[in-house]
Length: 379
Length: 76
Image (cartoon, rainbow over all chains, first blue to last red; front, side, top):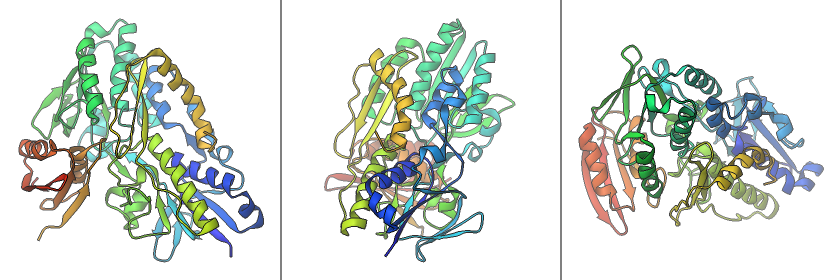
């Protein structure tokens, strides 16, 4: 009997799963024993980590995008038709265009989104680079910047957890090259009592900040932004003036998850090892969509997708579960416009970042191109 | 009786227990309780210190086998 795997979401996690399944189940797809369908929200696939480079003129917008149909294996039935309601009891997903898709296995890969509107004044008073429009506006603001106070404000939760540190170091190099660093006071704010969630990264960053003259304020959770007075206040009672506010807005998961009653804030309760939705054995959750307490990052999505591919193939072909996710995360860390390092960890191995080098920075630049091989399931 | 949500952040290196708690509080209503589990001993003091700073209430802190539990009630 023919089986259907339905993937909701066309970002990195969903795309790797779709392409990986095609590579491993060619026979089933050819004979009609398996159908793979993806419901996406866009005809284009964006390389999200590339947004970090856009405000500094280090990546052109066109380099961020590919046609999703060309990234996907041709055997995937791809619809740009966002899911409207996911019914895990009836095993079906209805869409905005009014279609209904039944499934044997469901992969939820609906991702996350920034929510600047959730903090009063942030949308009006802040700049960010976590979406294309924001990155464009920040690029323009940096072009106009002639010196003054920059507040780089980080909010919880957010994806790509090293990006705030990266942008701090890149801002330093960018403004120094323009002769503006001496006229700039950069203050980095962070929600908890150190500069980064990862303790070894925080310990490494502190002297680096001191060396470069980057100010910091920890235990800063944004309460309001006043675009008129140009001030930002924290729940902890602090107020900072700014000339340019660069914020990492808080994130939430997809609205369809919340609307379907699958998880508060759009995060789906997920088993940390099997990646099954809690209480399901036919629904997998990958990427930012899970509520697993680990980094929301492209590499997390990638490693989770690899495990999910193996498990889906094994379940379809042999009726058994293959392997568990070990919590692996790997992140490059740009430490300026010409150097970088990396950090990796899993559920049992703590992170231990090495010294920055030009070589790792170059490898990150190479990965900015190699990403498309990852999305295709080749790397 | 307030609803109590459990977050098992044991072994979570990033974003870590306090960041998980902050994120969860943003999605909670006043009066709701969150029981956060952490294998990091520092959480047993860091979380109450942060709660005192912003005005949330720590209902209880307890040590279990290999982890600490801190129950926080959203107060504002």
